[in-house]
Length: 248
Image (tube, rainbow, N blue to C red; front, side):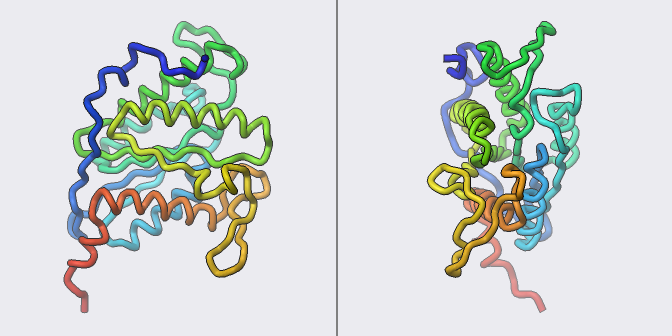
């Protein structure tokens, strides 16, 4: 019951669902994309930046902070950082990756420390923060892509991550400007943790580092390709590339 969406949040007054319509970019006016978050955003973000630049139709920016998240603004204040990053770039697409460091104690707005996720007050406070960031990122023509966390090797950590992912899905479902990309579909084996996955050529490739948490380059590439597919579908990047005059 602790993870059930609370009434009276900003999500309750969200407009009827509609997909964000991105403009079709050109090489002269590329789509402005920001990707960032905690350390899970590093390798994935580097992959997304590379793939996005290869289109010549996207201008990507990457910002990640290790050991950061939404539970410890005293360590790193992401709402404040996002306000600067997104405004400075005039971002049209924001790709967010949080949660890897968030399964820890949290402090309520009145200063009360909550030490464990099992405390019934933890989930409503974390949900409030997630909702606030999603609402902060809302703009008329901006797509927010929220990437869930992949399955984790440690069962206890995986269970905590699953609770966090459910909150992301719930809050995104109430906000038509937010699209969720499920990392488990790309980096898991039937929803379970996987070190190795088929590489498409009859072999296997490592998708996770030895810590059982972070992604390898191959894992980052898989996730980045899926996110770019979402952006391409919304902005018509493939059709724009196909109609671009030949160079040389």
